[in-house]
Length: 228
Image 1 (cartoon, helix red, strand yellow):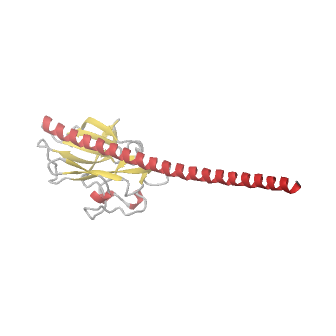
Image 2: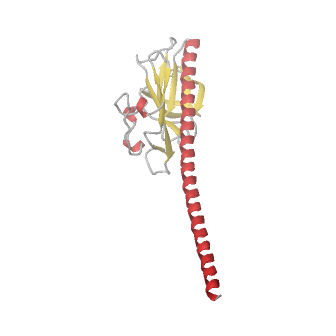
Image 3: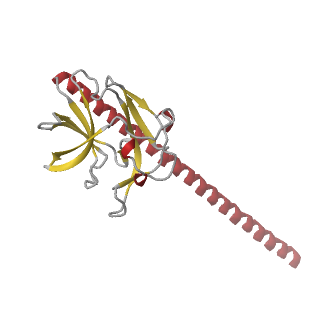
């Protein structure tokens, strides 16, 4: 009789042990699945936000070209390049008439949070980006917004003189300077105050999208580093 009770207690212990192990396995599987799903969602969010920024950039380019043609004047597309203005740096896009004269803003656009325009490749220094292969696929050269060929200092925001990268559309809808180029947007994270010379650091060459603009001012979307 005693042996019988002992056997039942042992069985209950074994059954309880297997139940606990199974529970731990299930919890582990759920944790792994949650991590995978969360990572996937983050990746999806980044892709969606990049596409939104790409569309905003396309709208700004189209608006600048349309204004230039309809008003019969040069219209510049400018990107804020002033490191002293962390709020607008590489995110604020303005359309300006008469850059060399009164320089009046006719429209403005803001990219989504966490997305910024990459500077011209000649100004895209190593201190602005994390490590990685920042080389385009089709071009074989370094990724950068080759469309934004020129720089200027203008007082457009509350009277403060700031730095800008820009390019102009002519009344014919073509580009000044004779050729088009690329505009590239990418994910970036903000830097702590005084941690760097730049307010942001670009995160990954795999998290980029862009547009290729022809000499005639027509834009074609590019969907990754391999298309640049």
